[in-house]
Amino acid sequence: MATEPTKKQGPLLTTADGAPIADQENALTAGPRGPVLMQDVALQEQIQRFNRERVPERAVHAKGSGAFGTFTVTGDITEYTRASMFSEVGKQTEMAARFSTVAGERGAADAERDPRGFSLKFYTDEGNWDLVGNNTPIFFVRDPYKFQMFIHSQKRHPHTNLRDADMQWDFWSLCPESLHQVTWLFGDRGIPKTYRNMNGYGSHTYSLVNKDGVRTWVKFHFKTDQGIENLTNEEATELIGQDRESHQRDLWEAIDQGDFPTWTCYVQLMTQEQAEEVDYNPFDLTKVWPHADFPLIEVGKMELNRNPQNYFHEVEQAAYNPSSLVPGIGPSPDKMLQGRLMSYQDAHLYRIGVNYRALKVNRPKTPVRNYMRDGQFGGMLDEGTGHPNYYPNSVEGAPRPDPSYAEPAWHLGDVTVERYNSREDHDDFSQAADLYNLMSEDEKERLVTNLAGALGGVDRQEIVDRQLAHFDQVDEDYGRRVREAVSKVRQSSGDGQAGVEAAMSVKDMVPEGKAK
Ligand code: HEM
Image 1 (cartoon, protein in one colour):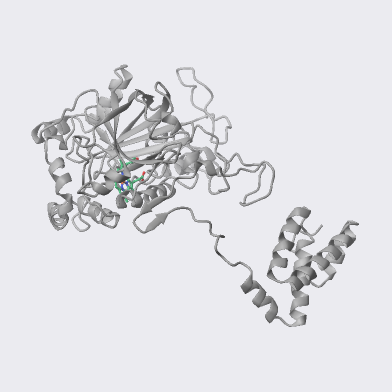
Image 2 (cartoon, rainbow, N blue to C red):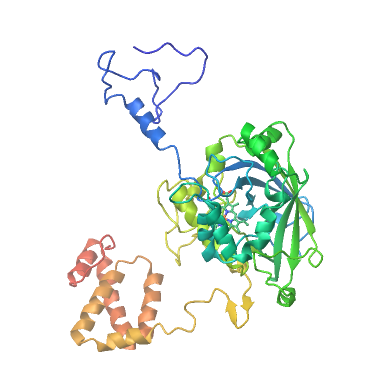
């Protein structure tokens, strides 16, 4: 018997398939004492769906809080970058932010001594730009090979399942490059009072590229307008005793009450010539660039003014990715950044799934058109329904790259980093000619027949001509014979199905579905 309708009015409750549900409290049973019937599909669906509610937590930075807002340009840096987000003073870009602690799990207390993550996602009109930084301008290690080991040393001991001072200090003491960051972490700024009261740093050196293709090295700084405020060990211990979610609560309540936190964004700039002159490696993440030599230049204001509607959808499944870069903002030789350019994308594919960018929080505001396809939940983002799934192609209206977005070459000593044309300076023909000329007359005949049968299935003459020109270049005899055989096949297929039979009858294999 169905239960009473609930006391308050609301919309109709449905199954996941949208069918109305009559009773959400009493399982379908054979008699009042059970057993429960398989037939209660709504109950089964609820059990199964519940069992799948969690996705793996982030391997690091698992505990975090997020919000949305706007970035407004206040200083002109168009001389240094073509990034559309910075194209004019006053321009506003929607953004998302996520702040986090590093070592603790998803349920960790907020007020712990730990660096804080400072992740920003800007939905620019030339794609998403993510700046995935920390509240420190430096890091513990300078080589990506050490990162995973470093994190192991900070997480739980595999035997005791406890955080372990021996592991932590064993690693740090064996890696003196960590000293700068260790000094920061155990200093006053090691426990920010709230997420609103800390600065954020891109930390790495990135590059800006202007419309003339000139590259300038850059570091990003976000200084809190709320003022820096920190906790002592004693204050933090007391606070955690009262409220494990102090940072989450503070951020959510401030925004909810209209007290929107803001940060002023600055850049430090360094030319290639300066990079060669300074007596430290400007791409070393354990080093800052002294402000006296490379002053802060104000470029913008970030305001967080909207809380997420659904924490799981908009914060837990938010995928911040240092490789989400846009024209005008690029990487640098920093080894750590290079390691991160791959790591995050891989983490998102594992944690959220291949189509993670289709989720609203990760989705660019710009159209997405490419040749990547399918996967679980495919179709949510793919706008490319009417074009082929390969490139290069000669299909009218299919998406094409635009060379005007090419990054300028990097000159790194004797080596130049560039997208070299893989067809230039390569002989694609002589080894194919050797192979052809090694064949007996019979083998050549079968080769030509097979090729003619396959090419006979191609609709567009321009494609056939392009391919025949390649055979000509391999060997004159080869080209001539394929051309003649193709022309015979195409003539005989001119009259419909008879052509198919003619093509098929030349004892070859026309790929299935290609025959005309
Ligand atoms: C999160 C890898 C260094 C800041 C993560 C995640 C991975 C990772 C796998 C989890 C991503 C996810 O599941 O969403 C690495 C590697 C590094 C490195 C391989 C060095 C080679 C750094 C550095 C910073 C940083 C130097 C800061 C300057 C963050 C932040 C998050 C994060 C803020 C959380 C992102 C979010 O809010 O979702 N890192 N990391 N990481 N990392 Fe790193």
